[in-house]
Image (cartoon, rainbow, N blue to C red; front, side, top):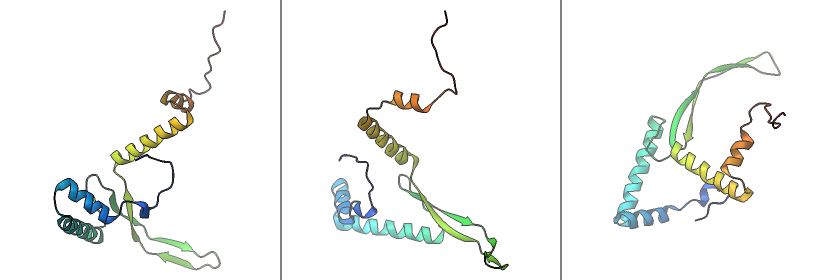
Length: 138
């Protein structure tokens, strides 16, 4: 598999039957057993998201519930003050290990495509103020 710098949508991800087949091959469980286990896992994850608003399983994306405070706003066309109640929203994140591996892989691809080394990147992006070496004065 070659990594490419291009946009990828979620419907381009590996499909459920392919995942079930791969897990079955790796673990030795039948595809029916794997399907049942994954169905139970998803049910637990969905219940946790509904009840607690949080999900954290090591190695997978996590979800946290955040609260947006209530606020009052004046409508622009009148002097009416409207109060918006506090509300909750879910925020997902990627584990740092996966995020860093992804970032490093694509940085390496960009470096190869553009003929840039790590040293070049470091020198281009870390300037020392206006300090310039002009050579030696004799």
